[in-house]
Amino acid sequence: MFDPTKVISKKCADIKPSGIRKFFDLLETMPDVVSLTVGQPDFVTPWKIREAAIESIEKGRTYYTSNAGTQKLRDALSDYLTSFDLHYDPKKEIIVTCGGSEAVDAAIRALVDEGDEVIVHSPNFVCYEPLVNLCGGKCVTIETVAEEDFKVTPEKLRAAISPKTKLLVLSYPNNPTGAVMEREDLEALANVIKDTDICVLSDEIYAELTYGQKHVSIASLPGMRERTVVVSGFSKAFAMTGWRLGYACAPKEIASQILKIHQYAIMCASTASQFAGIEALTSCLEAKDEMVREYDRRRKFVVNELQNIGLKCYVPKGAFYVFPDIRVSGLTSDQFAEKLLFEYKACVVPGNAFGDCGEGFVRISYAYSVDHIKEGISRIGEMLKSL
Image 1: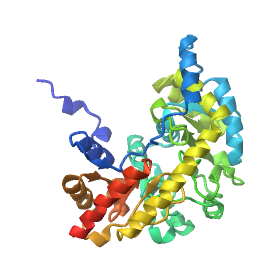
Image 2: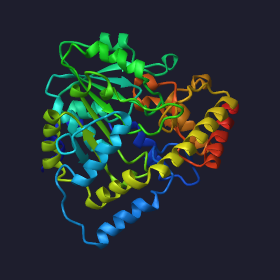
Image 3: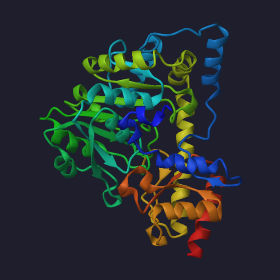
Image 4: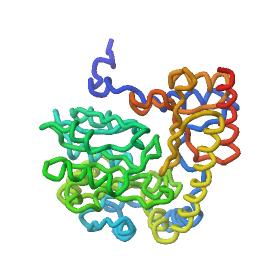
């Protein structure tokens, strides 16, 4: 009898399932749970964006677009990115993808060969290491800590570099910590790698979600554009998670390789989503700013509530997550999350889902209403009192 397990790729079989999905799957079987887990806006996509997609379908615009995306969308992206001091040729250096996730995947596959080392910082989003492993690369982890605002320091970067280093992955504003890298922080890293052949993959999906400061891209620094791939998307800033619309920006030599992978794997992003993206960039910036203001209000609220129940919490400066230290409970991250879920009907993501150095923390999303957040944290407070 044929055994399907014998034909599965070893690289794929060796990848561990996402630690985040474990709790999402449990939630589906448990009613009345207050979830603080989901990393997507609770806002409905602004009407003008939805209307543009509906109109495109009604007018029969249901064809393939150019592999790289419609020229109008790439032109709009090129104009939009100048607000971050990023300048890319919309014809040769911008590729529209199926979400930021595809952009990350295609960029890693375009750059990483068997045996290459890729430096990633932790805690961080879960996708980078599995994608590197599928390319035959090896991840070298830089552990960041709350005492240093979860930033990658030049000292730690220098220590992680070896002759095999091909790529540095930066993901700021950061999921799960909410940390940001300011201009001087990025300049210090640029000084470390400026005389090397190391490339940078800068995942800037939360670039618009910063509080009290403007996002700075490492690609905007002198000498960094030519060695950096910037990836982002519409999911977080415009409340468009289900539209699966992202993009990659890179020097034309690298962009052409990313485009080849995109051509063979995807063909092109959804046509209706692309028309929606044009509308987002040209007429919905005010709606985006209103959502950011509401996230800021929730950010302040959740940090204050966590402190009131006795949890230390780094104050996030970007994204829509907090990463409180739960070691005072005497529980591991998994124990804390499981006890909270099964006994108090509230759900958070254990910090170790984002890397080993996330142990002792949990991730809480504040992409929920204030009332929902308040109830969830109240249940956390009840659990802590019982301990």
